[in-house]
Length: 415
Image 1 (cartoon, rainbow, N blue to C red):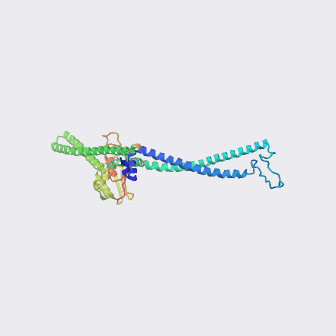
Image 2 (cartoon, rainbow, N blue to C red; image 1 turned 135 degrees about the vertical axis):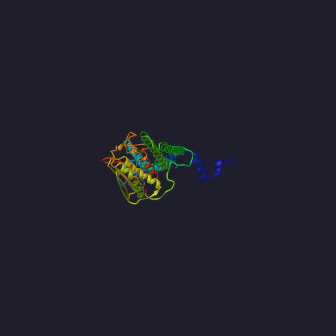
Image 3 (tube, rainbow, N blue to C red; image 1 turned 30 degrees about the vertical axis):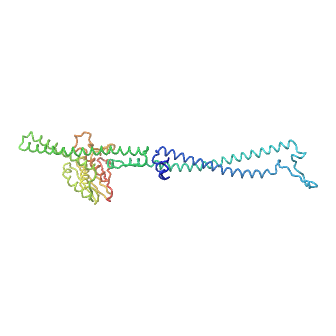
């Protein structure tokens, strides 16, 4: 009976095994093979070098003891007379018991020195080999762990990049269905849920705003027609209050629609001069500035931005409008567009708590805690941040030393 694995080549077999092994199994097998190879290399290293060193030391010790008490002097029958004093040996009558014990002790001393030398050489070379293999094993383990945890690094980088503007991005990890693949799939599933939630929320805001505009328009028409002049004197303030409330509701709905549009992203872009749009927005709000007795100063240099002209004009208009509305009587508003691709609007309003600056960019947040104490709906800076983000820019705000707020919008260079 044929083995199915024998029908595939070695490369296909390796690929099949790699895809079937889980991350834990692959990591365990890799470290097992790593330490096995390291141990085998260490064993060979110590054995070879220790043996070589021991043999060299043994040869040296043997040479030093060649003339020791255990070496008897040979005699020759051809010699008629001794040429000098001879060393007694075991066959010599002069060989005594004490001399035999001395020879035995000398042999023991030589053996002990050989053992000590062998142990010393083994320890020295083992320590050297252990240090070398530890460095190599550490380097190989670092490299192997980096390759094994590369998908985790991709998940981390994707999580850092994640925002409501790029929820459509997915990891889509490939490979076996192991722990890392499950982690990537779970992350993609979470992004799916978040994207659906954000999309549903934006769609609801846009649809609700569209649906509310029609009855409000009809309501305003009914008020104007039904309460047309001539009216009794006591009904004229009532009509004005109703019309003011209606206009505020229409402005709120328009702001919600604008916020929903900017959160959706850019449908089309074109090269636009932000400085020109800023001057137009400031001119259109000159009557509002006169009403609040606020002086407006505009300093601009041409700045080309690739984006949506309508949204960019709303960005500038909201910044200037907020600076005028949240200002003191006879205050100032300074608008600046410079070569550093910055739009900065500064006013001389009341003092701002630095701990509350970041919360001003959230919808329906105002400096006044009483929502009915000031005009506006608290959506101006939220719209500014949404439009800037849609254009790849950033928005920062800082309180002035004498009061007021300075808001800076940075936009990327035109590609």
